[in-house]
Amino acid sequence: SPSAVKKAAMLSFATAMVAGAVMTLLTQQWIFIPIGALAVISAWFYTGGSNPYGYLGLGELFVFVWFGLVAVVGTSFAQTGNITVLSLILGAGSGSFACALLVVNNLRDIPSDSQVGKRTLAVKLGDKLTRVLYVTLIWIGLGSSLLIAGLSFVNADSGQPLWIGASAVAALVAHIPGRAVINGAQGRDLIAVLAGTGRTQLVWSVLVAAALIAESSF
Image (tube, rainbow, N blue to C red; front, side, top):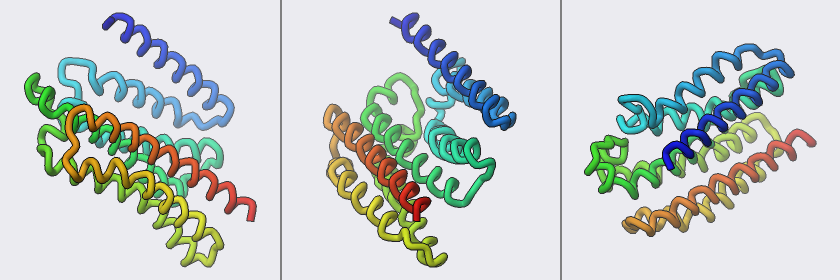
């Protein structure tokens, strides 16, 4: 029921705020207080309020920022106290995969969203361009770890095979949902694409984490 969903949302907000407060106390990085407040506000107005920005074509932008840049760069900053080029690049990669998930979801819902006036980015772009956007986001995500491989080569580091491997294996996983989107999958068939996109991000994230751990131990 709507009331149960609202209670679950409030519980999630509370849990996140407590966790964030504890992390802030442990790290003494007080900048996380306003960032956390903005995160809660952004989460609420994604679908809440009289003009939710998720239905104005801005959902992908906010997902990229919060699920990508803020999540990855913020995590790195909490642990090291620094904002690095590495965290920015991988934050962009993570954000791109997260956006791809949203794009697939909204691609599936173009017919129903159009009928009820939800002007998502997919509705604004239309079916064909939304499919192009999905594939582009996947390649941006894969390309982020390839970019790190290039930087490793320039800096004469030894981790290039790890970063290339992360992109290559994730690309193999991404091939199935990507091909379905390109071939015009619609409706319920896009649910499998949603799952495949999630698996792609998971595989990429695990392999990127492994590459980071391996490089730090060299």
